[in-house]
Length: 356
Image 1 (spheres, rainbow, N blue to C red):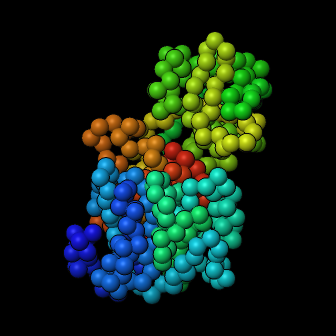
Image 2 (tube, rainbow, N blue to C red; image 1 turned 45 degrees about the horizontal axis):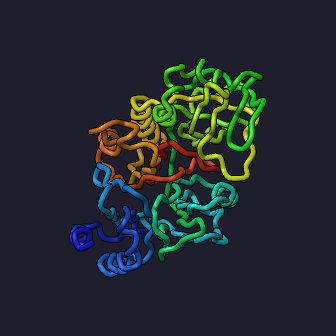
Image 3 (cartoon, rainbow, N blue to C red; image 1 turned 120 degrees about the horizontal axis):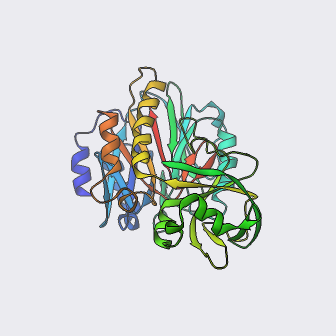
């Protein structure tokens, strides 16, 4: 913390908002850290969250705790901090940053919040092992927290999953709990093997890492991409494949909420680390073009805990790749358990937002 405070001595004056992200176990001392940040910088409104890893200075910091802090001058833009309930004048906002708690109803709660805000939102779900993993004015837990931005401000955001479609949408014709027994009246594991390859189906570790099942409710065909600058994900819930049983014919979905029913339709997607980095750099370019020459003040990155070294491989840091694509724009963020995509939450994704 002393190192962070010493570096903030050279921070720009006139900052309105402070962004702070904590990597466990630093989260345990969030209240003390906030006091230190306020005293040193004079910034009263700090917004942030906690996870297993944070992004700062063009790299990922994880393992033994880390702190990433950034004073953000917004040129007189208005700040509307909130916790749980949107402020009364939320409809005046031009954009917002939202952090979602680790709760069973987080998706529904965020959807209602997004509908009330009516402006572009960026953010993610904290992935900390500690309580009070969200920060907006004070450390908090149990409710969505964030800051809405008003006045002469722009926030543009997009989402990338780095996935390639594997065939058409399939009807779920049999299943129980989290296990799909049949697709299109065929054994589900047989359909998966035809799409992903029999060898992959026989390797549970690789299967869980590489293949996603997207649950659809209306689409007849999977979208060409799961994300984009609009932040839409084709109304699909994403699940990893926990297990495929070639003898019984079933596949088990990982991440299906307890008590939830199986989706009526699913499509398979293959996660591709090379494509993921290419999409992320393209997203940076597209968002800068969307700003039409207006220089971004900060870039926010929320990238899934299912990405990182296990996904990209050793020696590949997606924050460094993104920082190179962005150029001289401060980059800050965290690994997230879920990511804000339009008016809903998604997983296995990277969300990038630029504030100008």
